[in-house]
Length: 267
Image (cartoon, rainbow, N blue to C red):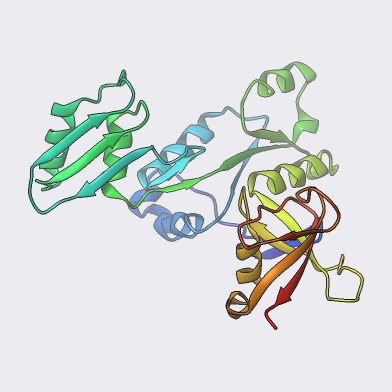
């Protein structure tokens, strides 16, 4: 493992052995390798741009077999188990991918679930419904890093450019590494919050890193120390999220990247 410092944040990078076909079944110590990948915020799949994309399909299938859903969001399905009442099934949107009440009841029967309330809030497939019942799937963003772009032509690079979620690089010549780090930063949903002790200038050297799309002042305080909220009175906030500089805010105020926060305790 190593550490990459970018925009004041220390990002831990773990280099895993290559995944081979059959890794999800334990071949080549594949289960240990993929189980480590389940705990990551982002997976980088490094591929050789000069070789066919068949390796990409093999790796995706092995991750799928191990319960990792690549570049997907958890399905908007509400599943509540009950003690009695049978299977209740509702559709908030029309289902066009094979799901209906009979299929849902048949799957629940396979999993020995006799009483539950099911509400589908989006159009899903049967596999996605099974993922909801299993409840142990990991939804992780994946970025495909195509290395050795110095060995291919512009026409071949244009073909690769049609692929989503990819970054072309050349590690030998250090081409496009800045874009790769920027993509890692944005896909991990990291934002920087600077602390400001009372009567002092903000600490721009060591920002507090939050991994949330809409982080609140309360999340920021808990990241510093769990006991802060017990004595929390209010916070002064400077930055994009403040309507005026500074703004007195409560615990539910949503912060933005590079905001400055000063915490005030109860007297």
